[in-house]
Length: 122
Image 1: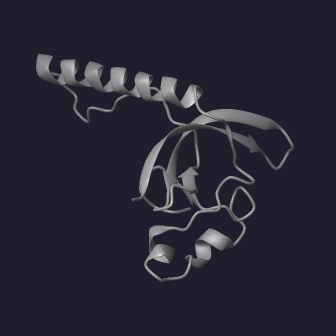
Image 2: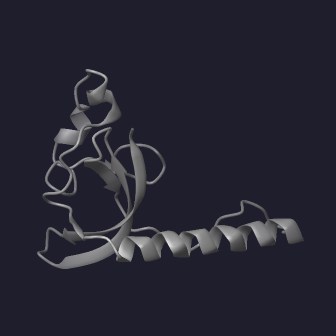
């Protein structure tokens, strides 16, 4: 079954600089990574409101605690290399379709599928 989690990913930019960040990583049904968010996750919880009730504040703190725990788990797992780790199949490919053209036409990491964090592929 496909799933996602937070993982530390090593990325070498076009300028040659290497960075490490915690990203959302998506896995195919075989558990092989196939995509990740294009940017590392941010450490905030957006409550989408201008005023905040006590319940909303409590829920935001609970969400932050869950995020911290997920990031801690990521730090205990092997680092994924953005250039080599993402060999899994997208859900569309697993259903017998082809990888969308945008995923194979010169993305940030030499054609690796990258999720923009909004559920859309860059």
